[in-house]
Length: 535
Image (cartoon, rainbow, N blue to C red):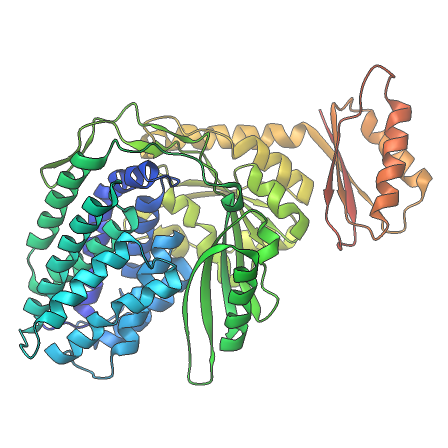
């Protein structure tokens, strides 16, 4: 079968179907390896995104066109370091193609370009690196022998699997989850090209064998403090803008993966996935930031054992005898904010945070729901503009393939209301075993908590030209609700003076035996401040 766009699209769908079954196992590998138990889930959503991006292609379209569509979709919708790595591999293949049809010579050149993707994914020296070196060595060993395209692709895939076995045996650790995902993509492409699932069955058997040998060697642990948050950035700009962003990240010592491409004029879109301790420190200084998405990456309290599972079986092969380690599922809560100073506090609540979201982010806003087993998500706007944006999520975003997402919008109208709702709802655990069976129950819990959070708070705006008597009057009004805590979003230019005035007024209102519980969030250089009383 010719290797064209139709084969590529089918390979993504095969990979998505396989990863739907394998995700708990791959997540477990990630946790055992000290990660945050999400590589399998991220790979599943990434493959689904790639498949969706190639749906409109004709079977007769050249492979280069299919790769271009997949790369564009992947820049927008890939998840995690593994998702960026997959798109980087596709980009390396696309760069190596210059012919409309794939001949054995062209295929070999394309496959030998695969290791170049690891530079952007910071995967050099890893199990993925060793796996690709083995696969490329196999092709180079063929010399002047040119098998047919399907046979050459199969030789590459089989050698990659062997390389993963060798890398796992030499490392004295568990299987590398990212390398397993890359091997799956290769095997799915082979299955689509030869219309034969043999390579996938071989991969499942190999993973089961490796898991049996190394699954108990290490235990999961939380990432180091410098990787407390993950930030996803889509940057639109020139190659110089991208180089400036990379220099900034290198100077910060941040761990990151990146992918993207430029057009003939040197303009393009670039995706960065970053691990950092301070999300705002990695915000681009040049180019146009199309997306700035922040999440708390620390799994110390959320990694556990799936007590309702009975191992993992796929293709009739027992991959895990024991119950898998997994990330305990929380409610999918997405907060949209225009205030940079709110990003970290919102992320610490467990919410997925989008800073200054635009129309281009509509599809990204529902990605957390696609990762969730219940497919339930709450979007929390922080102003009327964010509310209008969330309301534009159409049926085309809510349904992708067979997935039906349940998206609701909270009635919050300012940043502190959004924070109160996210703290109340994002910490909710999904009732086990999850899935559509508990979606209705989870939706009811989220709606109830969001409603209760709004009733338990009262917020007032402090004008930029405030006077002490204005603050005193606002404080007296809020004090009538008998609050136990106060939150100040300090956004005025004279925020330091406002904080001092507020502390003095609160001390005068509070009995001597009671300490003032005031939380201050720096929103500078915003033009307004908000004071919230929490019951």
